[in-house]
Length: 194
Image (cartoon, rainbow, N blue to C red; front, side, top):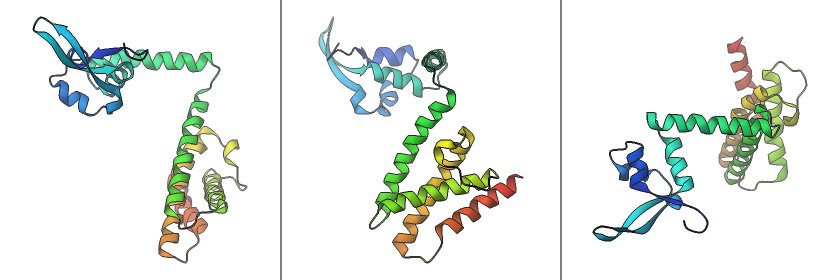
């Protein structure tokens, strides 16, 4: 135990999961989950690789090995029960993930524009909202908070495309209408689906 968190010997964890190469299994894990500890053995003190509790869970969740599947299923059941016990609907979980996507996209937009201003963020969101409303056959634009989970899912790539196109237009000083290009692209997708 270190700083209130328990650690496991990495070799014990990888052996229990039937990994042939413990080193290769641990390479994909971020360093913050790994450590070392001195362990008293018959041959004297040895330094061993350790995994934090989160590291153990992360290793198991990334694994496709049959040994990990039962634990993964149990974790998913626990998460579902926690969500239900808290009164959180499934679509609300998606809304939380959508907020993260929104934040990442706005950060990318900021990085791609020479001089970003508030109106750029508003423009990107309005174009995405209108395009999604059109895709779902609505004559008037629905704002993001009023959208269904299906609409929010469809909105993510639209917002990403809008932000990327705004960055390209700014970078190359292009004379094009962002909204027209986005509406055209996503109306074609809607027409193809019908």
